Image (cartoon, rainbow, N blue to C red; front, side, top):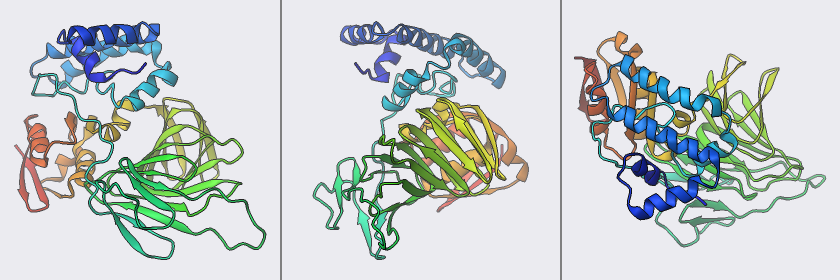
Length: 378
């Protein structure tokens, strides 16, 4: 049995209907860990709601209370993490990122399956380019592909290696700024691409391996095939899996991360490699691998239709916003870039609404000129 996050949230806030209360009760009774999870939701929303205009110290106090309740169960993620990804949410629970919401009504961000897809391109191995439109329900007039309501689907089948056969040919999906898109590969692997990202994939999978090339950020749900490993090449990093769910972020060559949601993956860079456990994140810089516990709410926020920034520099935050809103950022003072923020906002909001929320912190002011945002000190 699955459950919508908005029903859990309304239950926590005593705003659920009788029918919703029955559904949530039935859901949590299926597993004692769900019972604890619902208790944590109540703790978060009721503690968080008591802070009208929180300081950084007050936010940390609330987060500490929620962490204390969840720390013992941090690695029930094999199932709980699956709920985070599948239900697209549990957003803001473990790390109180909703404390800066100025609207206290129980609004829930939409689950984004395909956002603004105008301009998403499919480039075939022969160099021809096709614009993919999300609202198009008929099959795309390209051999080997079709467009469905949930994105593009590759129809080719896995082929056996044939002696003397020419090398693999590749197609590519390119997602511009301000868009997201979903691709289903011929083996059944599902890939959700973030804005300003691209993926190259073979026209035919061979039997010995499934290898794709990523620039930008994508969430992978890999079809299990023990005899044919799946590999993601992202800049100088290789992520090798058999069947799992994970996120790879590789916008810059020297700043790549892989976060495992379920299953098991091996991350390699240069001569170094390691295996991740569910809930862990590997960061790669200068071919050095560093592992830490992942903040899954923040990592998966983009695919859940949200921006979640927890103790993040203004520069890093604006870089991410620029990919979604297709803007350039100019700072009146370099020192502004290092200011740190705690911000939650839905990706469905306008650029002005997002920047207004940032400005509410009292640290910055902004001006918009065309595609340029000028950030100054308040």
